Amino acid sequence: MVGWVEIIFRSMIAIVLLWAISKLFVRKSFAQLTLFEGMSTVALAVIAALSSVQLSIPFMYLIVSLLTWGIIMFFAGWFAIKSKRFRNVYYGKGIPIIKDGKLLEEAMKKQRYSTDELLSQLRKKDVFQAADVEFAILEPAGDISVLLKRQHQSLVAKDLGLQEATIKEPQTVVMDGKVLDEPLAVIGLNRGWLEVELDKIGVAIENVFLGQVDQFGQLTVDLFDDEIQVPEPVNKQLVLMAMKKAQADLETYALETEHIEAKESYMANAMKLQKLIAKLEPHLQ
Amino acid sequence: MTVGAKVKGTVASLKGVEASLHQFYLHAEVDELKPILLEGVQAIRNIVGDLESRVAQLEAEEPQYKGF
Image 1 (cartoon, rainbow over the protein chains, first blue to last red):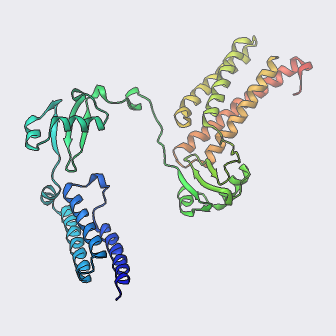
Image 2 (image 1 turned 45 degrees about the vertical axis):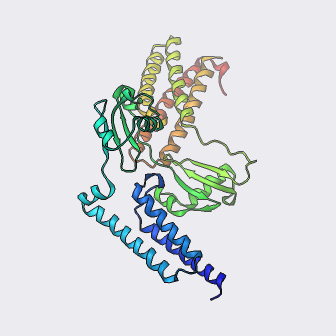
């Protein structure tokens, strides 16, 4: 085979093989790889790159090498699932580095982990004072996971005793002008419904770049032509406010009227409305 | 504004609320929401009913402000 033709051939094979082998690795983001995994990745890349261009290396060597790496890494991952002991050895365990608010100097020394490094990692988690930390672990990948002391943790709705309603994820039903039937089916809607909703806004499906439906069945769209203005869907908060205003009005009418029956009727309805508002409020936020 | 006009305003607003709640009810995905919303729709309908009969009374008392 002529030189450059062989290079094209090798490169194509290398690319495909590299991609296939990457699929055999455990799914992790690049930053989360342990040092060993990082090094193997680089090794694989170098093998693939070198054999793509270095014609003096017999071609089969490329394939054999990549396959060997791939198979071993695959089995390493598979075995790690089967055996916790192997997992601890292969990936390493997380090492506590701060416990009960105190820095564990012996652990740090053992890991040759300097205080500067510790502080730097803490800052990456927006922690500027080591005293704020209740517990911290040095993960196998080298980053730190931090548990702050209770008083430094952010407020959650639960802390205020607020009853929050569950929020369900919205579904993307239109992408690049094409309708995605599966997400529609997930919410229990269909194309017919979608067409009606789009008619209401006065937009054709072909104009929609992105369309999503929330848990309330409200459709929001982004159009190809950004000049066209799309009206906002019925605002849940406006509904809530309308109810509150009506409730206040009813109380006012109750006060202003001299007609006894009317007074009682207004008050009774004002209270009913009050109860209704309390019930619906968490769902209409 | 007369009391009649004000009450009618509240009635109109509540009818809008009822329509919106009904719309949410029809489109609600979360099943726990549906009975709550339905209850809301019916409660508001009742309130609107009471208010409308009061409006009728007011109009009877002051016929000059009758109508829209």
